[in-house]
Image (spheres, rainbow, N blue to C red):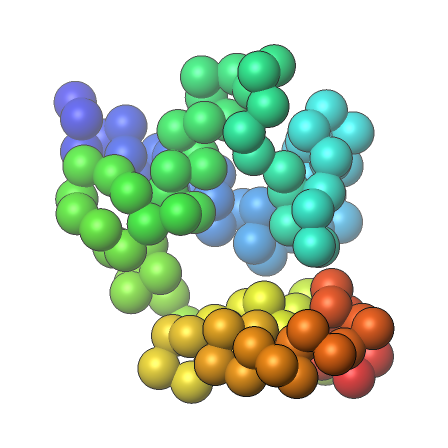
Length: 116
């Protein structure tokens, strides 16, 4: 049952990645808000379901650390849904970490690739 539950939570995580214009994404943004272009996590009002989906996003889960991120490939496409500074790029490290000084100087910290 644990693996089945983890798979279903992973499907929710996938849906939130690929369908940012969908009704569920909009409901979750209204409920939890967005921080740096991502759905917010960590409030006291978070539901148990949302905390579990967030664990999948953060690389935690029954299948081991980082299983979800290791199982998908991100395509930039038009660059609208890819964040320049905070999404992982080189070796899975966000540019905000690899080039901390430039990130600190930037006035567009939560911009997408298309904006940059």
